Amino acid sequence: MTINLPIFRSRFTDIANNRENIENIFAEFFNDFNRTSSSLLSETVRASLLPKLNISETDNKYFIEAELPGVKQGDLELKLDNNILVIKGKTEESKERNYFMRERYYGSFQRSLTLPNNINENDIIANFKDGILNIEITKKLENSTKNIEVKAQ
Image (cartoon, rainbow, N blue to C red; front, side, top):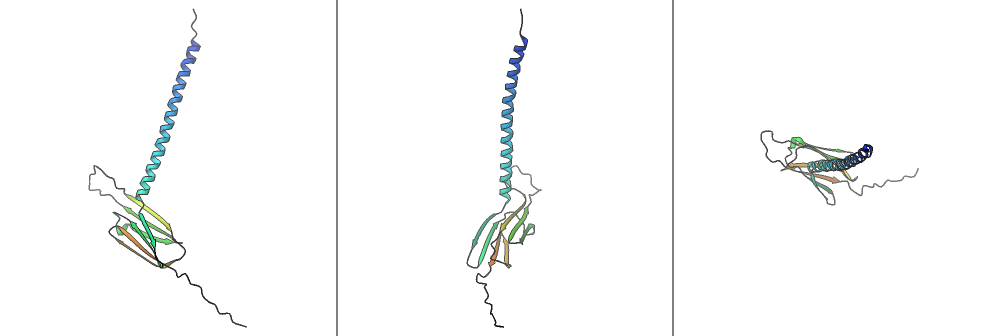
């Protein structure tokens, strides 16, 4: 009586390989899912740290309102460079409390806005009150053409 072990081993190896392949498929799927969900979560965290803005205009001014709850005026920085307005700040959590639930995000943020070319860089007013940053930017006069007299020689 002859037992054909190589065939049995071959079938066992095939079954083991198939099982390993299926486990690899699931592992790759869940690793991709975890990578995707963690990147989505980090995007959500980043987006929640950015100040919410309202931007409007009149004939002679632009208005920007930024919600900055929990930001102190000393932790707020506003810069204008090449028509790019940068709002920087940070919020800090209270170390004195023992939280059992926390939904607010803490940390640094930066928001950049490209402003139109018709702004007057020398006439910008910013006020901060009750967690709202109000920025007024005066527009340059549209009709800034100048007549040049041509003289005969």
